[in-house]
Length: 343
Image 1 (cartoon, rainbow, N blue to C red):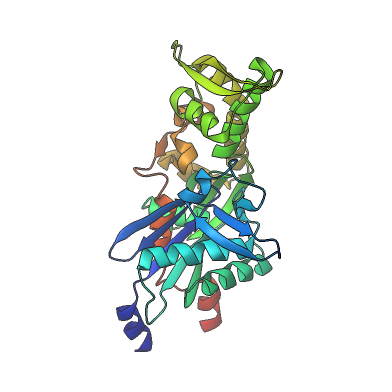
Image 2 (image 1 turned 90 degrees about the vertical axis):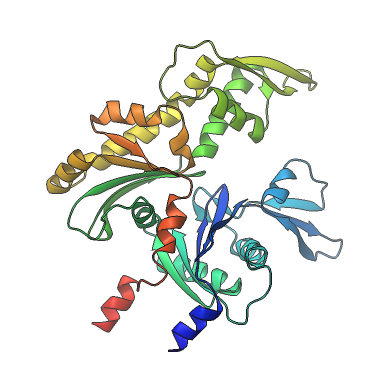
């Protein structure tokens, strides 16, 4: 009775707090927030800290701040590394989403990495509750991705998900609404950018920022050689003179820079398949592999994985939002711990 009354006063939300972006879905409204996971914090001479801004506005300040302002990214490689800043970020984003303070705080489903320990789970729950949520349901990332991809995960049938986020990649085989086997490696979209920046520093003596590296990845990057003569001008700072300069970067160079992280992702997929029980492996061979996450948009990465595994690979319609959409459908679903307690 009380639960239904509270639900009428506040819409349920789903939160996917990733290394690069935080997405919030509100029941009845869809995805209403997609902001960079960043917080700009000012520290006064007395050591008092206050939040200046969050999200995309804070990210714009990265690398451009005076000493008394710091841009903090509270999620790194898929894990929350600064719970206080994460809580502050969520509180600000939730206030933006709601537009006003509600009489009753909403319920929320929050994505977490698979295998997170109990202490870390408790810390996530407390941080989210402190940001203005009355009840928190934790949904493991592979399950959220599978549900968001509309896979029948509750069946006794194997499904493989590859989730390539900003800071990590998770390859998981699911069955009966749980993860049977998974492989998580700290290689994601930001590491692809770093590989490009490293290549330009070593090859051209040019230091570039994360934004420039990402632009090169989006414009020229591919997991399979394209054989095209595409190129792009990159601007940065010379390692020799320290002066600003520009160089022309070819698609072949970017592809070569991405070869190693792409190989690591493919190796993780092959390793997961090797450790998958035979019956589930047979199911995966029949149904194929589903790719989600922003990193799945790297040109021809699905093709490279398909050629390595001999299996069909499909990218979801909206890979960057698949996880939060899956989490949104789990707000009303009791966790396994609660079900076990009831039994």
